Image 1 (cartoon, one colour):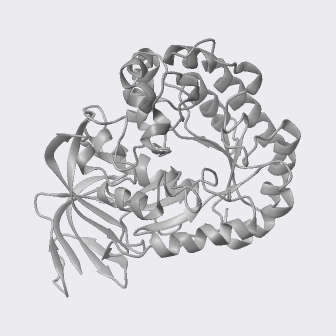
Image 2 (image 1 turned 90 degrees about the vertical axis):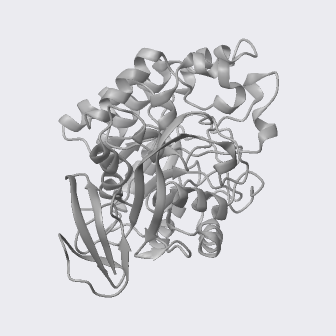
Length: 426
């Protein structure tokens, strides 16, 4: 198959190129390639590497009234994504045992229309399960440094984290942390959105990130900090990288687009943890993405039913943003974000960090995961266009750019996803 005449966008740059696909992988890239087999005319369109969303909660098995793998993966494909890695909580059972992994794997095999990986969970008492989960194929492990909001996924105290990091290092895997220091969190002193924000201050995130980095350094454990919401948090990660620590971080579109005042406007659909921060913090985070200082942008798609996002007491509203379908289009609508930066932050850098071999780039030998998109199209996020199990989002009404023409997974129209196992860590 030849994808003909599109503007190829990768982390290295953008140029008009043809793409030849053989046996589901990219075989050659160049101008005016010799025609063999099917042709897809991409003239006037851009072709990105298929997106990789490494932070989604598709809640299956167990909470399919919140979201399903079928709905979530279809939403991703509509937004230019060809792979995801599903988080180990909000499903039931949580993915902290080999048996639970097997249940989720079967659900994903049945339902996912794009390729998928699975995170395992680190919780108190399951260190003996980590080796079996690595053998099953988990991409790595997720732990909470504060209560997760899910009773059957308790947070890790310092000793559990230390033991888990040592085991994960032995297994040549990686640990992801939700970094908020529980001692600096408090019960909201009222029922309003701003009361919730004040109960989860910037200092809680910064202190927890610093503690996790120090512990991971001592254990020799690769570390990744999820959904970083603060500039000081990103700065700590950068300083650790300069020291040679094996640490990385990510942020999410909602921290790049919204501030504390938006929570008053959005109500429950805007509640998440960590919460939105100041307008100044938001603007600097966006500039850091534009400069490549923040290497990954993921959705943290954490949906629920609409009724769980409603109510007069903000403290009791479910915390989570539905947004995986819109991530790339939201970023493309930001005038200071170059498409090459978006290709890197939503595909290439994620594949490299999590050892997703043959993913995240358009080059010979890589899987033919392609997003063909019309960048002349501009619109807003509309509820009627969303494919989630529960069709609502904090992003409704937000400007987007790009209309999906085709999403190809391994050179084929989306249909049946395959398990992605991580490659060996060098």
